[in-house]
Image: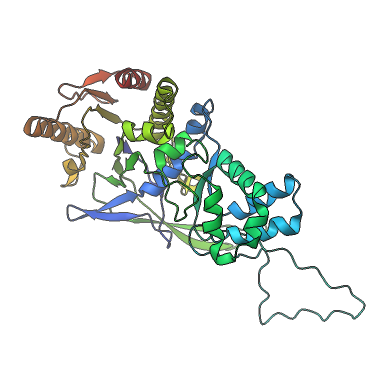
Length: 390
């Protein structure tokens, strides 16, 4: 995908600076793959198009709290449920307890309490795992059921042996069906309880086809009730860049993930088509949210190129932009980017002769790519893609 953005700061580092990288010896703007994946996965576009599929899942550290709530809801005494939930903190890496209250500063001058004042009850600690883990709601529910049915044995186990004991009561292969978003984005859990899932998608860090120099917006916040001066001064860094974005989906791996041993092929192939359609539309219509209230950089892409292959030979065409693109004569930055992209794709096709089942091309400009089916609209592009997956 080629997508030009107006001045923006879509993905910041820890200093608030737009993320960047060096490519071909030149500084480039960058949007991290993690940012792109989360933006897509949590977008309204993706969620709405996937609503007919069973896809209630979440990344969280709050599994112990979910277990505690579920066990209490099912009638277990809170003390016993909390004992189990506290031990659940050890799932993944070593558990870490986070308190909900802010610690009192050493310099705090808290007034002394009267002897007659009843002691303030301390808030219960929020139970959490150190590792952020990806779960489906059904997976959590089945885990709650397994714990409830074996609670006495789990309480008798030492904290050190808790995970091993719990694993004997849980078959991680059949713990729950893998949701399509988990089948797409995968998960890695350092625990014997849950099944690791290899992601079926690879997402490149988006990078600018042009070299960049950071720019600075000096701003003032004016106090409406003061006639002179300003209430605050500050600077915001930004740039304007034409991004090349690259994604690769292994459809066989996706089907392997969500089937999880099931043989109902038709059901899962339908899920594949819906997931691919939702993903592609989210890639097209969704933009990272960084600093959007300040810049509102909501520009749609100018070109989308899709290759469907029988052989697993993914090819990124990022090397088309080793030398940065620059506007020239009557051609703007997007024109030059697309000219370079077309030239590089056709060169790679000729030199390497990688078998392509079908190539699809959508663009807002007057550019064609040899042997690619030209799609006039995004709907045409998605229709042709789904047909090619059949």
